[in-house]
Image (cartoon, rainbow, N blue to C red; front, side, top):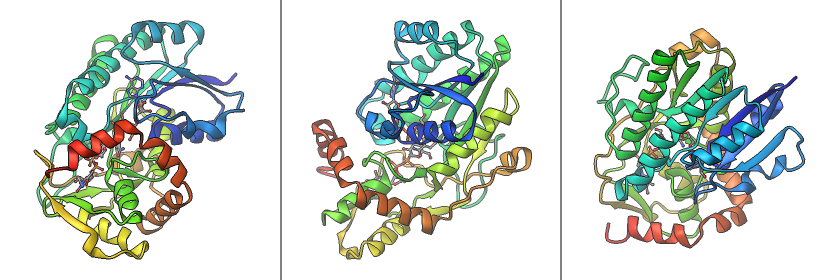
Length: 337
Ligand code: NAD
Ligand code: DAU
């Protein structure tokens, strides 16, 4: 019989990609669970509409009754938690939704998973829990947790709760921590899709500070494959870092996007820096590659082309997701900057 897996945050950027992968790669039945916040979009799961192994449930991990219902209705074997408020800039404007979803929501999910004796729970976390690096070195799983933004502080708190449930209750939890993702279906408030969309409409490309902050970019499908491998083969109680060893300063990415779209660099506008802006992230993925044999498949040049082409072919998707709420957010984050 197929294993029934509850995937939360399944209508977001990475969650939707993961659900599609999971249904093609193994004998699973997926219960997709998502509150459909501004970042969640059922359209991202359109291709699964007629798949008998996929069921979508609209629900909020902050709500005990929503969780009670889904756990009572389905015999859940495993849980993978993608649900989160995920945007650093929004957490700087208002941290409370980050505490509610990322901390309280995660604790609720841990409690219901424990009560219903799930066999495996995977928490999808981020490299940002480690804080910021100087010019050298990489984050390993042993690096101390030193979050700098309200977003990363909330993800760190969630990781600590997951760890505590493993230690205190022998709860079968695993944690993955990944670097910056890019690819199709990413909400256009994050660097790469924002710059693609602004370039296409000849709008300013707002680069924070001097553009020399470094992120370690991974194509979303590589991240999803790594999560699946950790879920299936990882050791309970362990953390696995995921990255593609692809460090790049923001300005270089912005210039590559402009060049691919044949747009002028005069569109670049350096704006006031993000407060507490982490300087550099870089992941050491020795553990996942040596223990589980996972390695990334996409190189950045091809991944970026695939991504830009996807946005060019799906402008109607972007138009639909940039609702009134997004326009208000854009105005408050970028005007007077
Ligand atoms: P996203 O913002 O695109 O999607 C988040 C999803 O969670 C949305 O569908 C949203 O509707 C849903 N959600 C939010 N609050 C919820 C709640 N209370 N209950 C149920 N659903 C809720 O985010 P993403 O970029 O796909 O990130 C997914 C996960 O991966 C997050 O946990 C994030 O911290 C982590 N992560 C992201 C990256 C990245 O580069 N994007 C890198 C490493 C880790
Ligand atoms: O590192 C993993 C994290 O990556 C995830 O945990 C987060 O969920 C995800 O949002 C992402 O966080 P970042 O803050 O790194 O991503 P963002 O796309 O917001 O910004 C990437 C870099 O680009 C960062 O250095 C800030 C810069 N930036 C971003 C925006 C939106 C700009 O210069 N201008 C912008 O307009």
